[in-house]
Amino acid sequence: MADQNPHLPRAHQSLSARLLVLTVAFVMLAELSIYTPSVARFRKSYLEERITRAQLATLAIESMPEQAADTEMGRILLKNTDSYAIALKQADRRILIAGGEMPPRVDAEYDLRMESFWVWIEDAFVALAQRENRILRVIGVSPKRPGVEIEVYMDETPLREEMYAYSGRIFQLSLVISLFTAGLVYVSLMLMMVRPMRRIMAGMESFRRAPEDETRIFQPSDRPDEIGIAQRELAVMQDELRLALRQKDRLAMLGAAVAKVNHDLRNSLATAMLIGDRLAASDDPDVQRLVPRMFRAMDRAVTLCSQTLDYASATMPTLTLKPMQLAEIVRMAGETLNQEVPGAADAASFELTNEVPDSVRVMADPAQMLRVFENLGRNAREAGASSVRVAARHQDGVLVVEVIDDGPGMPEQATEHLFQPFAGSARDGGTGLGLVIAREVLHAHGGDIELASTGPEGTTFRLRLKAA
Ligand SMILES: Nc1ncnc2c1ncn2[C@@H]1O[C@H](COP(=O)(O)OP(=O)(O)O)[C@@H](O)[C@H]1O
Ligand SMILES: [Mg+2]
Image (cartoon, rainbow, N blue to C red; front, side, top):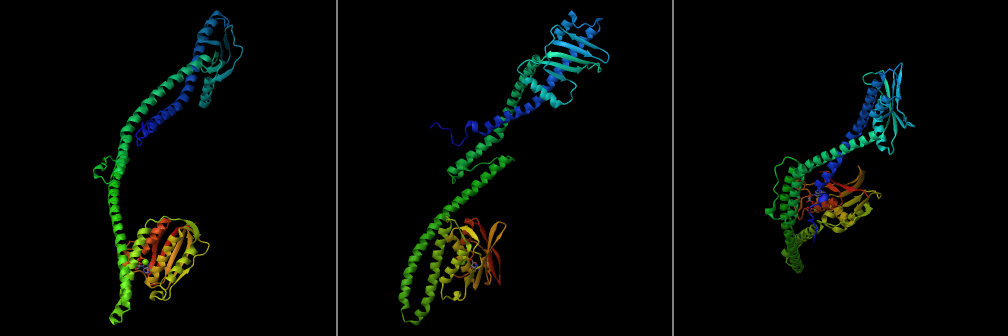
Protein backbone atom coordinates (compact mmCIF):
# COMPACT_ATOMS: atom_id res chain seq x y z
CA MET A 1 0.00 0.00 0.00
CA ALA A 2 1.23 3.44 -0.86
CA ASP A 3 -0.33 4.74 2.30
CA GLN A 4 1.71 6.98 4.56
CA ASN A 5 2.92 5.90 7.94
CA PRO A 6 -0.41 5.81 9.80
CA HIS A 7 1.23 7.06 12.97
CA LEU A 8 2.42 10.34 11.56
CA PRO A 9 -0.23 12.89 10.62
CA ARG A 10 -0.48 13.85 6.97
CA ALA A 11 1.62 16.87 6.08
CA HIS A 12 -1.32 19.27 5.96
CA GLN A 13 -2.75 17.91 9.19
CA SER A 14 0.43 18.15 11.19
CA LEU A 15 0.69 20.53 14.07
CA SER A 16 3.37 22.56 12.32
CA ALA A 17 1.43 22.99 9.08
CA ARG A 18 -1.64 24.16 10.96
CA LEU A 19 0.40 26.60 12.97
CA LEU A 20 2.05 27.88 9.84
CA VAL A 21 -1.29 28.67 8.26
CA LEU A 22 -2.63 30.16 11.47
CA THR A 23 0.40 32.40 11.90
CA VAL A 24 0.08 33.77 8.36
CA ALA A 25 -3.62 34.38 8.95
CA PHE A 26 -3.09 36.09 12.29
CA VAL A 27 -0.30 38.35 11.08
CA MET A 28 -2.42 39.34 8.07
CA LEU A 29 -5.26 40.12 10.46
CA ALA A 30 -2.98 42.26 12.56
CA GLU A 31 -1.77 44.04 9.43
CA LEU A 32 -5.34 44.71 8.40
CA SER A 33 -5.95 46.52 11.65
CA ILE A 34 -2.94 48.67 10.89
CA TYR A 35 -3.91 49.16 7.27
CA THR A 36 -7.39 50.52 8.00
CA PRO A 37 -6.35 53.74 9.74
CA SER A 38 -3.30 54.20 7.57
CA VAL A 39 -5.22 54.19 4.30
CA ALA A 40 -7.53 56.82 5.80
CA ARG A 41 -4.52 58.88 6.81
CA PHE A 42 -3.03 58.44 3.36
CA ARG A 43 -6.17 59.89 1.77
CA LYS A 44 -6.26 62.72 4.27
CA SER A 45 -2.71 63.83 3.56
CA TYR A 46 -3.32 63.52 -0.16
CA LEU A 47 -6.25 65.91 0.10
CA GLU A 48 -4.34 68.27 2.41
CA GLU A 49 -1.53 68.38 -0.04
CA ARG A 50 -4.00 69.34 -2.77
CA ILE A 51 -5.24 72.20 -0.62
CA THR A 52 -1.69 73.42 -0.04
CA ARG A 53 -0.95 73.32 -3.75
CA ALA A 54 -4.15 75.17 -4.51
CA GLN A 55 -3.26 77.81 -1.99
CA LEU A 56 0.14 78.30 -3.58
CA ALA A 57 -1.63 78.74 -6.89
CA THR A 58 -3.89 81.45 -5.47
CA LEU A 59 -0.83 83.34 -4.22
CA ALA A 60 0.26 83.84 -7.78
CA ILE A 61 -3.13 85.19 -8.82
CA GLU A 62 -3.49 87.38 -5.74
CA SER A 63 -0.39 89.31 -6.61
CA MET A 64 -1.79 90.26 -10.02
CA PRO A 65 -3.66 93.49 -10.38
CA GLU A 66 -6.75 92.12 -12.03
CA GLN A 67 -8.22 89.11 -10.30
CA ALA A 68 -9.32 87.25 -13.33
CA ALA A 69 -10.46 83.68 -13.34
CA ASP A 70 -10.29 83.17 -17.04
CA THR A 71 -6.86 84.47 -17.76
CA GLU A 72 -4.31 82.32 -19.45
CA MET A 73 -2.42 82.32 -16.16
CA GLY A 74 -5.41 80.84 -14.31
CA ARG A 75 -5.74 78.01 -16.84
CA ILE A 76 -2.09 77.11 -16.48
CA LEU A 77 -2.36 77.11 -12.72
CA LEU A 78 -5.41 74.87 -12.79
CA LYS A 79 -3.72 72.49 -15.15
CA ASN A 80 -0.72 72.30 -12.86
CA THR A 81 -2.84 71.58 -9.82
CA ASP A 82 -5.10 69.09 -11.65
CA SER A 83 -8.17 70.97 -10.54
CA TYR A 84 -11.29 72.24 -12.25
CA ALA A 85 -11.48 75.30 -10.05
CA ILE A 86 -9.97 76.81 -6.96
CA ALA A 87 -11.74 79.29 -4.69
CA LEU A 88 -10.23 81.31 -1.88
CA LYS A 89 -12.40 82.93 0.76
CA GLN A 90 -11.28 85.44 3.30
CA ALA A 91 -13.28 87.71 5.54
CA ASP A 92 -13.47 90.52 3.01
CA ARG A 93 -12.69 89.00 -0.33
CA ARG A 94 -13.04 86.00 -2.55
CA ILE A 95 -10.84 84.82 -5.38
CA LEU A 96 -12.09 82.27 -7.87
CA ILE A 97 -9.87 80.58 -10.41
CA ALA A 98 -12.11 78.74 -12.80
CA GLY A 99 -10.90 77.45 -16.13
CA GLY A 100 -13.17 77.23 -19.09
CA GLU A 101 -14.35 73.75 -18.36
CA MET A 102 -16.25 74.05 -15.10
CA PRO A 103 -17.47 70.60 -13.99
CA PRO A 104 -21.17 69.97 -14.59
CA ARG A 105 -21.82 68.74 -11.07
CA VAL A 106 -20.20 68.05 -7.68
CA ASP A 107 -20.65 64.43 -6.51
CA ALA A 108 -19.24 64.68 -3.02
CA GLU A 109 -18.06 67.32 -0.66
CA TYR A 110 -15.39 66.90 1.99
CA ASP A 111 -14.35 69.33 4.66
CA LEU A 112 -10.83 68.66 5.89
CA ARG A 113 -11.52 70.36 9.19
CA MET A 114 -13.63 67.38 10.15
CA GLU A 115 -12.49 65.88 13.44
CA SER A 116 -13.79 62.32 13.64
CA PHE A 117 -11.25 59.80 12.50
CA TRP A 118 -13.93 57.14 12.15
CA VAL A 119 -15.57 59.22 9.46
CA TRP A 120 -12.20 59.53 7.73
CA ILE A 121 -11.91 55.74 7.73
CA GLU A 122 -15.42 55.38 6.40
CA ASP A 123 -14.80 57.99 3.66
CA ALA A 124 -11.62 56.20 2.64
CA PHE A 125 -13.44 52.93 2.12
CA VAL A 126 -16.27 54.67 0.28
CA ALA A 127 -13.63 56.15 -2.03
CA LEU A 128 -12.01 52.74 -2.56
CA ALA A 129 -15.37 51.22 -3.39
CA GLN A 130 -16.22 53.67 -6.19
CA ARG A 131 -16.43 52.39 -9.74
CA GLU A 132 -16.88 55.72 -11.55
CA ASN A 133 -14.99 58.93 -11.21
CA ARG A 134 -16.56 61.42 -8.81
CA ILE A 135 -16.01 65.11 -8.78
CA LEU A 136 -15.08 66.29 -5.34
CA ARG A 137 -15.37 69.64 -3.70
CA VAL A 138 -12.69 69.72 -1.01
CA ILE A 139 -12.68 72.47 1.58
CA GLY A 140 -9.71 73.23 3.79
CA VAL A 141 -7.87 76.01 5.51
CA SER A 142 -4.44 77.22 4.63
CA PRO A 143 -1.97 75.89 7.19
CA LYS A 144 -0.03 79.19 7.08
CA ARG A 145 -3.01 81.58 7.04
CA PRO A 146 -5.67 80.15 9.34
CA GLY A 147 -8.34 82.68 8.41
CA VAL A 148 -8.28 81.71 4.76
CA GLU A 149 -10.59 79.02 3.48
CA ILE A 150 -9.70 77.21 0.25
CA GLU A 151 -11.90 75.12 -1.98
CA VAL A 152 -10.72 72.80 -4.70
CA TYR A 153 -12.84 71.04 -7.32
CA MET A 154 -11.11 67.89 -8.48
CA ASP A 155 -11.45 64.35 -9.89
CA GLU A 156 -11.41 61.45 -7.45
CA THR A 157 -9.94 58.81 -9.78
CA PRO A 158 -6.24 59.76 -9.41
CA LEU A 159 -6.68 59.74 -5.64
CA ARG A 160 -8.33 56.35 -5.74
CA GLU A 161 -5.60 54.95 -7.93
CA GLU A 162 -2.95 56.14 -5.55
CA MET A 163 -4.90 54.60 -2.68
CA TYR A 164 -4.98 51.30 -4.54
CA ALA A 165 -1.28 51.45 -5.18
CA TYR A 166 -0.70 52.22 -1.53
CA SER A 167 -2.92 49.27 -0.48
CA GLY A 168 -1.02 46.98 -2.81
CA ARG A 169 2.27 47.98 -1.24
CA ILE A 170 0.93 47.41 2.25
CA PHE A 171 -0.43 44.02 1.23
CA GLN A 172 2.88 42.91 -0.19
CA LEU A 173 4.71 44.08 2.85
CA SER A 174 2.26 42.28 5.14
CA LEU A 175 2.67 39.12 3.17
CA VAL A 176 6.43 39.28 3.46
CA ILE A 177 6.23 40.01 7.19
CA SER A 178 3.74 37.25 7.85
CA LEU A 179 5.65 34.67 5.84
CA PHE A 180 8.82 35.63 7.63
CA THR A 181 7.13 35.44 11.05
CA ALA A 182 5.42 32.20 10.18
CA GLY A 183 8.70 30.73 9.04
CA LEU A 184 10.32 31.63 12.33
CA VAL A 185 7.36 30.28 14.30
CA TYR A 186 7.44 27.11 12.22
CA VAL A 187 11.10 26.44 12.78
CA SER A 188 10.95 27.11 16.49
CA LEU A 189 7.84 25.00 16.94
CA MET A 190 9.41 22.24 14.95
CA LEU A 191 12.45 22.25 17.17
CA MET A 192 10.73 22.91 20.48
CA MET A 193 7.53 20.93 20.19
CA VAL A 194 6.89 18.84 17.14
CA ARG A 195 10.15 16.90 17.15
CA PRO A 196 10.02 16.09 20.87
CA MET A 197 6.34 15.20 20.48
CA ARG A 198 7.21 12.80 17.71
CA ARG A 199 9.82 11.24 19.95
CA ILE A 200 7.19 10.76 22.65
CA MET A 201 4.86 9.29 20.05
CA ALA A 202 7.51 6.88 18.87
CA GLY A 203 8.24 5.94 22.47
CA MET A 204 4.57 5.20 23.15
CA GLU A 205 4.25 3.17 20.03
CA SER A 206 7.30 1.05 20.59
CA PHE A 207 6.14 0.46 24.15
CA ARG A 208 2.71 -0.61 22.95
CA ARG A 209 4.26 -3.14 20.60
CA ALA A 210 6.41 -4.80 23.22
CA PRO A 211 5.63 -3.55 26.72
CA GLU A 212 7.82 -6.15 28.38
CA ASP A 213 10.94 -5.29 26.37
CA GLU A 214 13.18 -3.34 28.74
CA THR A 215 15.56 -2.25 26.02
CA ARG A 216 12.80 -0.06 24.65
CA ILE A 217 12.52 2.05 27.77
CA PHE A 218 11.86 5.66 26.85
CA GLN A 219 14.77 7.97 27.66
CA PRO A 220 13.32 11.28 28.87
CA SER A 221 15.28 14.49 28.45
CA ASP A 222 15.81 16.88 31.33
CA ARG A 223 13.98 19.84 29.78
CA PRO A 224 12.18 21.80 32.46
CA ASP A 225 9.08 22.59 30.39
CA GLU A 226 5.77 20.82 29.83
CA ILE A 227 7.19 18.53 27.18
CA GLY A 228 9.98 17.51 29.52
CA ILE A 229 7.43 16.73 32.19
CA ALA A 230 5.37 14.72 29.70
CA GLN A 231 8.48 12.76 28.73
CA ARG A 232 9.37 11.98 32.30
CA GLU A 233 5.78 11.07 33.14
CA LEU A 234 5.74 8.76 30.16
CA ALA A 235 8.91 7.06 31.31
CA VAL A 236 7.52 6.59 34.82
CA MET A 237 4.23 5.35 33.43
CA GLN A 238 5.97 2.82 31.22
CA ASP A 239 7.99 1.59 34.17
CA GLU A 240 4.93 1.17 36.34
CA LEU A 241 2.92 -0.40 33.57
CA ARG A 242 5.67 -2.87 32.88
CA LEU A 243 5.70 -3.88 36.54
CA ALA A 244 1.91 -4.08 36.64
CA LEU A 245 1.85 -6.22 33.53
CA ARG A 246 4.37 -8.60 34.98
CA GLN A 247 2.34 -8.72 38.19
CA LYS A 248 -0.80 -9.37 36.21
CA ASP A 249 0.77 -12.25 34.35
CA ARG A 250 1.86 -13.79 37.61
CA LEU A 251 -1.58 -13.27 39.12
CA ALA A 252 -3.27 -14.83 36.13
CA MET A 253 -1.07 -17.88 36.49
CA LEU A 254 -1.75 -17.99 40.22
CA GLY A 255 -5.45 -17.71 39.51
CA ALA A 256 -5.30 -20.68 37.20
CA ALA A 257 -3.36 -22.62 39.82
CA VAL A 258 -5.91 -21.73 42.50
CA ALA A 259 -8.74 -22.84 40.27
CA LYS A 260 -7.03 -26.16 39.75
CA VAL A 261 -6.26 -26.62 43.46
CA ASN A 262 -9.84 -25.71 44.22
CA HIS A 263 -11.19 -28.23 41.81
CA ASP A 264 -9.03 -31.09 43.06
CA LEU A 265 -9.65 -30.12 46.65
CA ARG A 266 -13.39 -30.30 46.17
CA ASN A 267 -13.08 -33.71 44.63
CA SER A 268 -10.98 -34.90 47.54
CA LEU A 269 -13.44 -33.37 49.97
CA ALA A 270 -16.33 -35.06 48.24
CA THR A 271 -14.55 -38.38 48.64
CA ALA A 272 -13.80 -37.60 52.28
CA MET A 273 -17.47 -36.75 52.86
CA LEU A 274 -18.54 -40.09 51.43
CA ILE A 275 -16.15 -41.89 53.71
CA GLY A 276 -17.36 -39.70 56.59
CA ASP A 277 -20.93 -40.79 55.94
CA ARG A 278 -19.85 -44.40 56.21
CA LEU A 279 -17.91 -43.66 59.39
CA ALA A 280 -20.95 -42.00 60.93
CA ALA A 281 -22.69 -45.34 60.83
CA SER A 282 -20.10 -46.78 63.23
CA ASP A 283 -21.06 -47.41 66.85
CA ASP A 284 -17.70 -46.43 68.28
CA PRO A 285 -18.37 -43.50 70.65
CA ASP A 286 -15.07 -41.85 69.72
CA VAL A 287 -16.02 -41.89 66.08
CA GLN A 288 -19.47 -40.56 66.93
CA ARG A 289 -17.88 -37.67 68.79
CA LEU A 290 -15.33 -36.79 66.15
CA VAL A 291 -17.31 -37.14 62.93
CA PRO A 292 -19.40 -33.95 63.35
CA ARG A 293 -16.21 -31.95 63.93
CA MET A 294 -14.72 -33.44 60.84
CA PHE A 295 -17.84 -32.46 58.87
CA ARG A 296 -17.64 -28.90 60.14
CA ALA A 297 -13.99 -28.67 59.13
CA MET A 298 -14.82 -29.98 55.69
CA ASP A 299 -17.76 -27.60 55.39
CA ARG A 300 -15.44 -24.72 56.02
CA ALA A 301 -13.03 -25.96 53.40
CA VAL A 302 -15.87 -26.23 50.87
CA THR A 303 -17.04 -22.71 51.68
CA LEU A 304 -13.54 -21.38 51.24
CA CYS A 305 -13.26 -23.09 47.88
CA SER A 306 -16.55 -21.89 46.55
CA GLN A 307 -16.08 -18.35 47.81
CA THR A 308 -12.63 -18.09 46.27
CA LEU A 309 -14.01 -19.25 42.96
CA ASP A 310 -16.91 -16.86 43.38
CA TYR A 311 -14.48 -14.01 43.91
CA ALA A 312 -12.41 -14.95 40.88
CA SER A 313 -15.46 -15.08 38.68
CA ALA A 314 -16.92 -11.88 40.13
CA THR A 315 -13.83 -9.74 39.70
CA MET A 316 -14.98 -8.44 36.36
CA PRO A 317 -18.72 -8.80 36.31
CA THR A 318 -20.38 -7.57 33.17
CA LEU A 319 -23.44 -5.85 34.46
CA THR A 320 -26.89 -5.96 32.97
CA LEU A 321 -28.34 -2.83 34.43
CA LYS A 322 -32.02 -2.16 34.72
CA PRO A 323 -34.06 0.26 36.77
CA MET A 324 -35.57 -1.38 39.81
CA GLN A 325 -36.82 -0.88 43.36
CA LEU A 326 -34.05 -1.03 45.92
CA ALA A 327 -36.55 -2.30 48.49
CA GLU A 328 -37.16 -5.35 46.33
CA ILE A 329 -33.47 -6.30 46.42
CA VAL A 330 -33.28 -5.82 50.18
CA ARG A 331 -36.32 -8.05 50.71
CA MET A 332 -34.80 -10.74 48.50
CA ALA A 333 -31.53 -10.61 50.46
CA GLY A 334 -33.54 -11.02 53.68
CA GLU A 335 -35.24 -14.11 52.33
CA THR A 336 -31.96 -15.70 51.27
CA LEU A 337 -30.45 -15.11 54.68
CA ASN A 338 -33.46 -16.59 56.46
CA GLN A 339 -33.34 -19.73 54.37
CA GLU A 340 -29.62 -20.20 54.70
CA VAL A 341 -29.07 -21.83 58.08
CA PRO A 342 -32.35 -22.90 59.53
CA GLY A 343 -31.74 -24.19 62.99
CA ALA A 344 -28.12 -23.15 63.18
CA ALA A 345 -26.98 -21.41 66.30
CA ASP A 346 -26.43 -17.96 64.81
CA ALA A 347 -29.82 -18.00 63.12
CA ALA A 348 -31.52 -18.14 66.47
CA SER A 349 -33.14 -14.76 66.10
CA PHE A 350 -32.01 -12.78 63.16
CA GLU A 351 -33.95 -10.40 61.00
CA LEU A 352 -33.10 -8.13 58.12
CA THR A 353 -35.55 -5.23 58.08
CA ASN A 354 -36.20 -3.21 54.98
CA GLU A 355 -36.79 0.50 55.67
CA VAL A 356 -36.24 1.59 52.09
CA PRO A 357 -39.39 3.15 50.65
CA ASP A 358 -40.76 1.52 47.48
CA SER A 359 -40.30 4.82 45.65
CA VAL A 360 -36.48 4.54 45.73
CA ARG A 361 -35.29 3.20 42.41
CA VAL A 362 -31.77 2.36 41.25
CA MET A 363 -30.08 1.30 38.01
CA ALA A 364 -28.56 -2.01 38.98
CA ASP A 365 -27.75 -5.54 38.04
CA PRO A 366 -30.18 -7.35 40.37
CA ALA A 367 -28.08 -10.48 40.85
CA GLN A 368 -24.94 -8.50 41.69
CA MET A 369 -26.66 -5.98 43.91
CA LEU A 370 -28.28 -8.82 45.77
CA ARG A 371 -24.83 -10.18 46.68
CA VAL A 372 -23.94 -6.85 48.28
CA PHE A 373 -26.86 -6.96 50.71
CA GLU A 374 -26.50 -10.69 51.29
CA ASN A 375 -22.83 -10.30 52.15
CA LEU A 376 -23.48 -7.39 54.50
CA GLY A 377 -26.39 -9.13 56.19
CA ARG A 378 -24.48 -12.38 56.50
CA ASN A 379 -21.52 -10.60 58.08
CA ALA A 380 -23.78 -8.99 60.65
CA ARG A 381 -25.42 -12.29 61.45
CA GLU A 382 -22.07 -14.04 61.73
CA ALA A 383 -20.82 -11.31 64.05
CA GLY A 384 -23.77 -11.99 66.33
CA ALA A 385 -26.20 -9.23 65.46
CA SER A 386 -29.87 -9.98 65.92
CA SER A 387 -31.19 -7.37 63.55
CA VAL A 388 -30.03 -5.40 60.54
CA ARG A 389 -31.88 -2.38 59.23
CA VAL A 390 -31.46 -1.06 55.69
CA ALA A 391 -32.45 2.58 55.20
CA ALA A 392 -32.02 4.95 52.24
CA ARG A 393 -32.17 8.67 51.62
CA HIS A 394 -31.33 11.03 48.77
CA GLN A 395 -28.51 13.42 49.47
CA ASP A 396 -26.78 15.82 47.03
CA GLY A 397 -28.05 13.92 44.03
CA VAL A 398 -26.87 10.49 45.15
CA LEU A 399 -28.64 7.72 46.95
CA VAL A 400 -27.17 7.02 50.39
CA VAL A 401 -28.03 3.60 51.75
CA GLU A 402 -27.15 2.56 55.30
CA VAL A 403 -26.91 -0.99 56.58
CA ILE A 404 -27.13 -0.77 60.37
CA ASP A 405 -26.73 -3.76 62.68
CA ASP A 406 -26.87 -4.17 66.45
CA GLY A 407 -23.90 -6.52 66.64
CA PRO A 408 -20.78 -6.24 68.80
CA GLY A 409 -18.77 -4.15 66.36
CA MET A 410 -15.85 -5.09 64.16
CA PRO A 411 -12.68 -6.54 65.61
CA GLU A 412 -9.50 -4.57 65.09
CA GLN A 413 -8.06 -7.17 62.74
CA ALA A 414 -11.03 -6.56 60.43
CA THR A 415 -10.98 -2.73 60.48
CA GLU A 416 -7.25 -2.69 59.80
CA HIS A 417 -7.59 -4.75 56.66
CA LEU A 418 -10.97 -3.50 55.62
CA PHE A 419 -11.77 -4.31 51.97
CA GLN A 420 -8.53 -6.24 51.45
CA PRO A 421 -9.11 -9.64 49.87
CA PHE A 422 -8.10 -12.61 52.02
CA ALA A 423 -6.72 -10.26 54.69
CA GLY A 424 -9.77 -8.68 56.29
CA SER A 425 -11.26 -11.76 57.81
CA ALA A 426 -11.29 -11.96 61.59
CA ARG A 427 -13.32 -15.08 62.08
CA ASP A 428 -12.76 -18.77 61.80
CA GLY A 429 -13.38 -20.04 58.33
CA GLY A 430 -13.73 -16.54 56.89
CA THR A 431 -12.12 -15.61 53.61
CA GLY A 432 -12.16 -11.85 53.90
CA LEU A 433 -13.90 -11.66 50.54
CA GLY A 434 -17.43 -10.61 51.46
CA LEU A 435 -16.72 -6.89 51.81
CA VAL A 436 -14.30 -6.91 48.89
CA ILE A 437 -16.94 -8.34 46.60
CA ALA A 438 -19.48 -5.82 47.87
CA ARG A 439 -17.13 -2.97 47.12
CA GLU A 440 -16.28 -4.26 43.64
CA VAL A 441 -19.92 -4.60 42.73
CA LEU A 442 -20.63 -1.08 43.95
CA HIS A 443 -17.66 0.33 42.07
CA ALA A 444 -18.89 -1.32 38.91
CA HIS A 445 -22.21 0.44 39.48
CA GLY A 446 -20.49 3.79 39.87
CA GLY A 447 -21.07 3.72 43.62
CA ASP A 448 -19.04 3.01 46.75
CA ILE A 449 -19.18 1.55 50.23
CA GLU A 450 -17.52 2.69 53.43
CA LEU A 451 -17.57 1.79 57.09
CA ALA A 452 -19.59 4.57 58.68
CA SER A 453 -19.23 3.52 62.30
CA THR A 454 -18.54 0.49 64.43
CA GLY A 455 -18.58 -0.12 68.18
CA PRO A 456 -20.22 -2.13 70.92
CA GLU A 457 -23.62 -0.74 69.98
CA GLY A 458 -23.36 -1.97 66.40
CA THR A 459 -21.84 -1.45 62.98
CA THR A 460 -23.03 0.72 60.11
CA PHE A 461 -21.93 0.49 56.50
CA ARG A 462 -22.75 3.41 54.22
CA LEU A 463 -23.32 2.83 50.50
CA ARG A 464 -23.56 5.44 47.81
CA LEU A 465 -25.43 4.69 44.62
CA LYS A 466 -26.56 6.56 41.58
CA ALA A 467 -30.28 7.09 41.80
CA ALA A 468 -32.26 6.04 38.75
N1 LIG B 1 -21.40 -6.19 60.61
C1 LIG B 1 -20.23 -6.59 61.12
N2 LIG B 1 -20.06 -6.62 62.47
C2 LIG B 1 -18.89 -7.03 63.01
N3 LIG B 1 -17.83 -7.46 62.28
C3 LIG B 1 -17.95 -7.46 60.93
C4 LIG B 1 -19.13 -7.03 60.29
N4 LIG B 1 -18.95 -7.11 58.95
C5 LIG B 1 -17.71 -7.62 58.79
N5 LIG B 1 -17.10 -7.82 59.95
C6 LIG B 1 -15.73 -8.31 60.16
O1 LIG B 1 -15.04 -8.08 58.98
C7 LIG B 1 -14.42 -9.27 58.53
C8 LIG B 1 -14.40 -9.31 57.02
O2 LIG B 1 -15.65 -9.56 56.48
P1 LIG B 1 -15.79 -10.20 55.07
O3 LIG B 1 -15.04 -9.35 54.13
O4 LIG B 1 -17.20 -10.44 54.78
O5 LIG B 1 -15.00 -11.55 55.17
P2 LIG B 1 -15.45 -12.89 55.93
O6 LIG B 1 -16.89 -12.72 56.26
O7 LIG B 1 -15.19 -13.97 54.97
O8 LIG B 1 -14.59 -12.96 57.13
C9 LIG B 1 -15.21 -10.38 59.14
O9 LIG B 1 -14.40 -11.49 59.39
C10 LIG B 1 -15.69 -9.79 60.44
O10 LIG B 1 -14.77 -9.98 61.47
MG1 LIG C 1 -18.44 -12.22 55.15
